[in-house]
Image 1 (tube, rainbow, N blue to C red):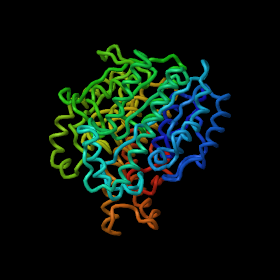
Image 2 (cartoon, one colour):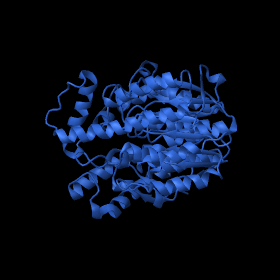
Image 3 (tube, rainbow, N blue to C red):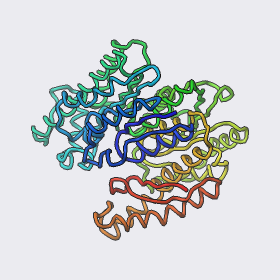
Image 4 (cartoon, rainbow, N blue to C red):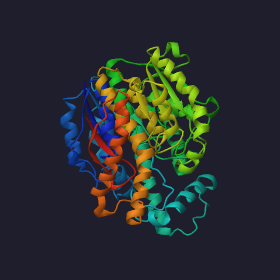
Length: 484
């Protein structure tokens, strides 16, 4: 099986993770060359990508395409570029001609996020001064309507921001039309870093209204919280469709009382998010572990709690271990029975919970898990975990590589090494970010500590020797590496 993927952008979450999932199913994932992908705010060559996609179409069994990449030149370009609606739609048009019975086309385009930070790294330049105020204004607009007041934000900034959002909303409405005309086999409109209130939520509700009248009771259009997980989930769904594979998934929550909680950057209770993500990968939810092909264990989120505070984590480590231990022992029992068990750790965003991972190492045969994840948002974790767990497991070595990679990044880097790196950067250079001329030193610091944690993963029976360690976008937020 050969699948062509136009990823959301160049980051490993959007390129490496989908490739790992395809490899588990012994499928070939074809990506554009790195030189044709964006570089942070430098957008990709859209006409070249359209030509590449047309050439690949005759040689592949399915297409998964980010409309943000094809239409704007990448996720960041969709927030920062000045193209008009007509230009974006013309760039997307070639994709709408490729759908065929033997070659399904799955497309996705993001409802833009509204970052609650005065940081313009991934946003228009004015976000550095007005980001938090724009976030608050978005919530006020949703609650109050056009009479909402935007204190302290220049009128031209508000206008530019709203015009960009209106453009992207118009593109999403146009894509609903294309789906209704049968030009996509699947359209996903995910909400990037969203919340229950704000313009993102308002736009989603409007799009859901049009979906429900254009395609009533039709499952070809999905809307849920996510972004960087879409490549993984859609590749998994493509594999499952081509293989006529629809696995049954039983969901076990580490704390059933928390399944109504809404995770940070999400807009619905976690049990609804899980159900939607299961459907997104082409699987079905079942009510019994005995009927399941996959058991998904979810460590649910604390209600609207942000990143782990190391002091909070250390203070409550004993309490968390006691709370999580029954679930870990249940995982051990299921693994001993030969069940396929996957773990989605969404207790906190942006890193796996150390107490859970330590318990898994202590009480389970970690190497037998079919998937693990605990990175970024709950939706990001669920999409990649379910993608890896729900495709046919034809290549066990590929499963081990994907499992090791997530353990080392989601736990080893994001929950351990990243804090150490930021503390070292602050002590040494007076800042938590990587100075422009200190990327090699920061990478060396990361590598030494990652190798130490990789040894523990390897001792658990998994291949885990990281090479070519690097920091995408020259920032501390994530890390990338190869595994030998």
